[in-house]
Length: 477
Image (tube, rainbow, N blue to C red; front, side, top):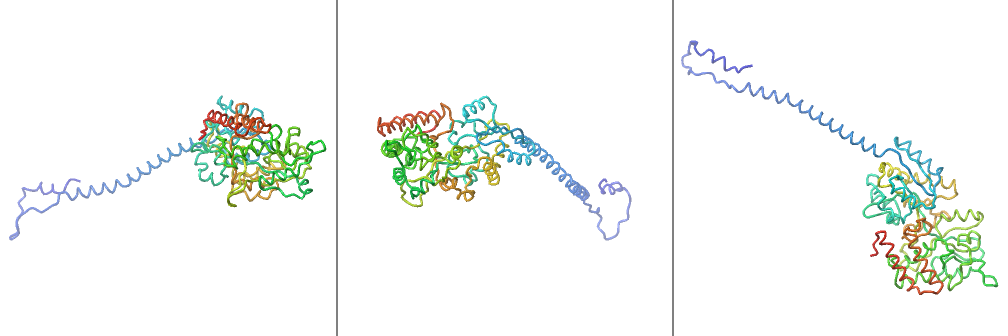
């Protein structure tokens, strides 16, 4: 509508009587008032448009986020190939099926591998870009697979939660730089096996320190009239027929405060010498005897140091043998509050850094390491072989602490340590454990045979250790 002031402009020539006493002037009209009303009306009309625009913008952003989320979801789904080493299909398949049922789009194929040449075959497959997406590896293998191992995403499990969930040795072993590169679904360590018949007959109690073990070993050793050992107190002192000698020697050195990266000095010499005394001085073990596992299974060995998985060898050879385990002996402590030290050796699970399904693989491993899944896994393992693996989680310790075999391992798990000197890891000729075992093995036998002093033998070991660690990028300082 045109401004109303135009009405008066069009009638300016009309003669209109002028009232007496009233000043002659035009009416005061505010010409802009209607315009303000129109502007105010436009502002009111623009508010719905702004709201509509905001809604449209939010819808567009929602669609963008949805598409991005959909792409991310696609990345965590897909085919996952898992190379396992010790568990049969029947043990893991029920857990895989449960996971797949709640995670549509994820398909997991478990492939049980042979232990023979496993490390080399795994390395070759990863080098060729063929996977697998998830693979089993020993806790000492991180330096050998550091470029192939993916880092655990915080979205799956934070570092704080990881340290809370698992024993300290696991967090230490499976950390590389600032990343965590593995999730365990089992745990094992050295423990002291006791022949119950021998101990009951002799009226002896298991030793708690190494001096008592040495004295007891001499008391429980029996020889015939020709000096041939018919019953040994303990299997220590040599490498040829002492199974797990690497783990035991490393344990003695760590308990004695030795830095295995540079195993020289009085403490290292003392640990090496002590290990050899059982053969060279005490005569409780020699090379004429069968392997320590065979001797224990045959009932001819009173004390036997090994991880819990040796139970399967013992049961296979003598299912009627009566035995149990007790905590590993310790050196004298300055305080009773000091934690016991044992030696951990276990297998864990990692994710290939080049896997197309990394997030799904990590999520699956997190599920496998949950308390519920580990209990089911233990039940499945026990049904197949009468003994499951110890739980790696700290919050599950009470469930197995009274077990006659696993209980001692759980009891000492908080103070467990480990290093790259472990038996039966199937590293292959160039593997870190194999190379280091060669150096330490030569030292043990040279000292036991009187060919070298502990100091001389360890000088050679230290040089070899430095070379091997440098080969795998491990600092010796």
